Length: 149
Image 1 (cartoon, rainbow, N blue to C red):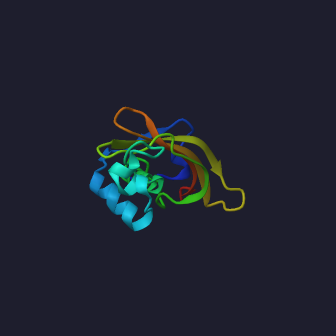
Image 2 (image 1 turned 90 degrees about the vertical axis):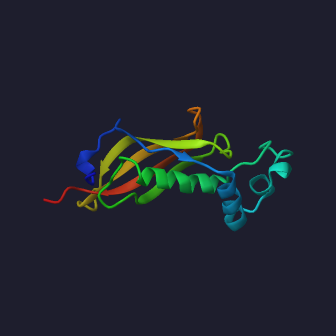
């Protein structure tokens, strides 16, 4: 798939990712390495927490989201390079067995006034579980080059 330049994007465009199945083993491995809290580490202990069961770390979900965006048909020429994150929300937990997908919608295309060779895309990326429920919503501003002359 060809890389896309700022001129190839328009507000309202929607890009979809492939799916990704989350396993209990990877939730536990990520938690042991990066976010060792009981609700990420121990299914039994997690039952008595706010989550009511084992839940993936939000940062683990963010990593999966990034991978799915990179594997999607959203292909900025320089790659997916964030300039500023406006929003990060985790409205519900990711559980073992969830199958995730990301829908990315271009909200705004903004050519740079100070750097004429690039601009920014304001994009809402919604990570959905297999029920179509959002498990993460982010709004990054992505740095994208303009088409070379």
